[in-house]
Each structure stands twice: as structure tokens, then as C-alpha cells.
Length: 142
Image 1 (cartoon, rainbow, N blue to C red):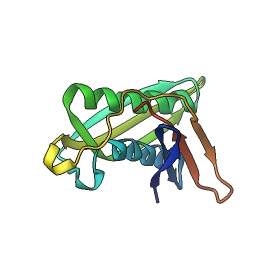
Image 2 (cartoon, rainbow, N blue to C red):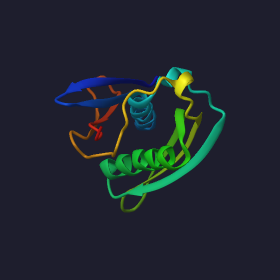
Image 3 (cartoon, rainbow, N blue to C red):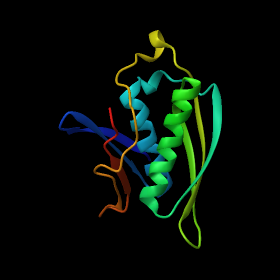
Image 4 (cartoon, rainbow, N blue to C red):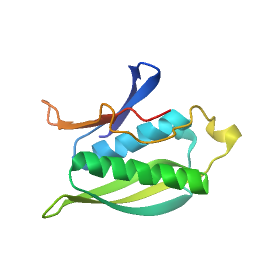
């Protein structure tokens, strides 16, 4: 089961996602990213976008995934509230394929909060926890 949260950080907000699998942790941190921007519980899965990115390591993969979501948000004005992620280990690095579903931003419905300017590597961490779950976190530029 995936779960996400925001955590305190000086002048910013950290985002953290948990999952039984690495894929679920990536899905949860993507949800946390949009949770900084809008009330994700009000986002309907009306439109879906396919995303494919690669990274030399898991941090680069997470960065590229979230950056692609942010670019789609900025260009198309879409907010996402549902994600399906598949991660494949390559000979050198990783490939992520995802389906992100959401709808165009509606200021009344989605209750906008903060604007995320960019994805960063600040406090980025991806690890398997002692209980076997995965955790992914970072502090985006607000």
C-alpha cells in the first residue's frame, strides 16, 4: 500500500512516499508532489499521459520522472492524482514507464496551494526500510 506525507524543512516542504515496492514508493512521492500544489483527493482521472524516462541510478530516475510530471503540469495545466509506475533495471541504469492520470487544473475544485518551481536532488533519498517497505523523498523548489 502506498502512502505519502509532507515533512518540515526550513523555508520549504519535503515530500516523502512509501510503498511495498519501489514502484509504489515512486507513485506515492509523485502524489505527494501534487499534494503540495493542490488537493489531490479532488483530482479526477479524466485524462492519462504515458511517461517513459531513464536514469543512470534510482535518484536520476526519480528526478527525471518528477521533472516530466512537472513539465506536463506547466505546459498543459494538468494536475495528476493517480499513477501507475513500472521500473526496469537495464544493463546500465533504469527505465521507468508510467501512466499518470488527472485533469486540467480547476482553481475552485482543486484548491491550489504552492507552486513547485523545480525538482531538486536536495535531501533526495531512496531506500528500503527495515520493515521491508520502500521510501523515496526529496525537497522540491517551491
